Image (cartoon, rainbow, N blue to C red; front, side, top):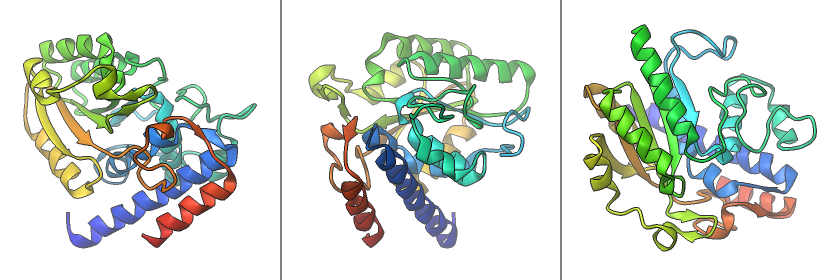
Length: 275
């Protein structure tokens, strides 16, 4: 990635954070923390890595797909999809309101561009593995991307999927773990400690990398390495900061789902623009 492209993607990530803060801020309540921690991952995927995606044909055959298993981070995905032209940006101001097409958690039947309905933690991971296996059967060459949370990784279903994907050599499945180390009830180490997370996934037979989840250049390198290896599913464990870019609650557990005024949202936007 050259310097100009990197700068473009970094600026795009900042724009997506702005849209997400405005989107949740208009409602005054939402999952700001886990949405903002995955913005850089989403930016790299949708503006650089994902192939054959088309806002005019959201169900296009042979496209790369994303399953956002931590479906409560839907507002960040909505911001990306709106910016890409899957639906009007005005929809963002209807988040989780009556009659909206943008519910609190992702819904493939209501939101153009959402590849799978998620929200019940762990289930999106199984769906992604099933999609990847189907694409193998079809020999489509498509990659299935999956984003899981760290709190979500305390669910047994995540590890069932881990065994399944390794058994069927799903090298077309690339998973990102949003490892911000905070969940609704506290730190992951306090609730159910996940470490040594690299050793765990290695033990399940996956190709494992651990990177800075906010460094777009490093994330790209990790994706390219994942795509280059064969016969193993991949996981990229992303060390992230909860509510990255939202100054009033960046790095705080309270940002998981919080209420905040439009004045607080504007303060966050001003601080973000000043970076």
